[in-house]
Image (cartoon, rainbow, N blue to C red):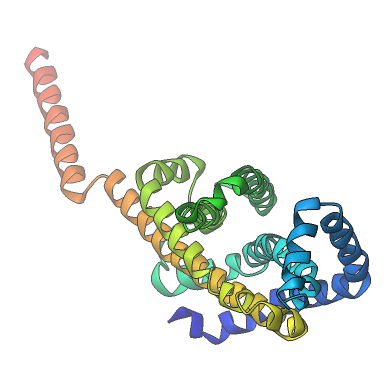
Length: 284
């Protein structure tokens, strides 16, 4: 329901506008050169040339025309996803965490266990690791079940790393953040993986094939908007979960009122006994 909050809707506009402007601008200036490079690479691949001639013999030569644009668009998807995640983490998450804390956890103390600069480096480092994992795992995508498991798992790990840190950067100390990561790692990773599968929704647009290539100027902004909403939703989900876990952790670590009363009574009793012993040795 927080996704329908006017503040969240307004915040989602900024990364959307920036991403659409970047995508269309880069496409306008570099699309033709990138397309020529992809086509040159495809023509130098003998196996693909043989397949293209076979398709032409079947009367499907038109598929060769859309092959290079389709490959180029598919290569741009990971870049769009990663940049959308970073923009949401930088431009939206701090404000959404503040919104959740204000409405659900107004008494939760802010211990400032990190900074926005540290959060940025944490996000960039996690993104590099996820990109390396994606590149290494690409050959495994040819195995049918793994293509449905590995990419969402990697996106989920990246989402968990970025969103969890940002959700706790203001309120938790460094020790509390590490303890929450240790205790709730499986749950946080599960939230990230589910968010990764939600992020697969724009794949329905890519699956339209040649129609997507023809309508790319319209469908790319729509896909970016869907990615932005998915990451905004996951950011709010992590904020609710992590702040609740932090509140529970502090309640467990804080001494209860009965413990305090018991300690006070013991200390007062010890002081009273000590006073009696002292008085017993005093001369009458």
